[in-house]
Image 1 (cartoon, rainbow, N blue to C red):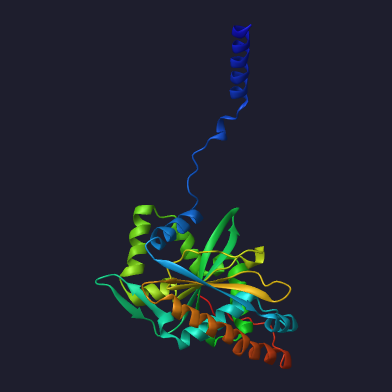
Image 2 (cartoon, one colour):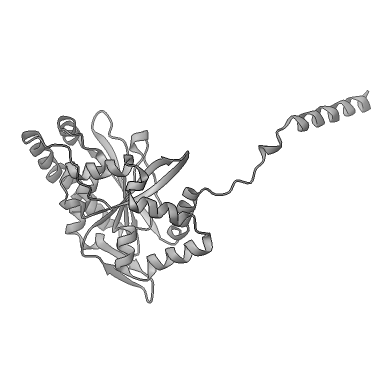
Length: 282
């Protein structure tokens, strides 16, 4: 009886293995979009990033935001507010450079790098959009630029086209080019990767806990709840400055959002603006 049971068990296993699709175990080549992300993570791993979080109530901003037309997204509001703070705090425009000897480079203007998720030809991509001096751009124009990055045909966005072409190079070509852009010149580093980065998944009801990036600071925020409460996080390069200064920067950022940004939103209510058509990103 035992022998027959064992034979029967073996038969069942063999039949099950024959029913298993041969392609259930696959070698999947990294897609072009994943190549860019793995490149970024490869170089971000050397940055000693730390995170500082603030818990704010932005109910007055949220109420004004609902009253203006065209609608301004939270990303535009936070980007402009952080641009204002970056213009005041030179440390936010400084970059740690390790070649030829360790030093700090300070860029004269604010350059924002925003992560944009798009689906291109059936593939999910993370693109990196650059906006120069966002603190000088009216909110309606800033929102227009962000909308174009999200919705315009890819062929109309030269920087995104360059990223897709670059992803097609093999890794032994891409990585040295990344290294050169990061280390050969502080100005080149700032232009390619920004003086600060902004990334958020708040529209999905979540917050990135410790986003990886290669800018000196990365700003992210979670969803704004019905009471106007929101978590705001800055991840910073500890080689450039310390957490106490980031706490001060967070306080100033909250003030900028509730003063300068609120004032501009109010002016949009009193003086309605037409939809912006100019494009202020690169």
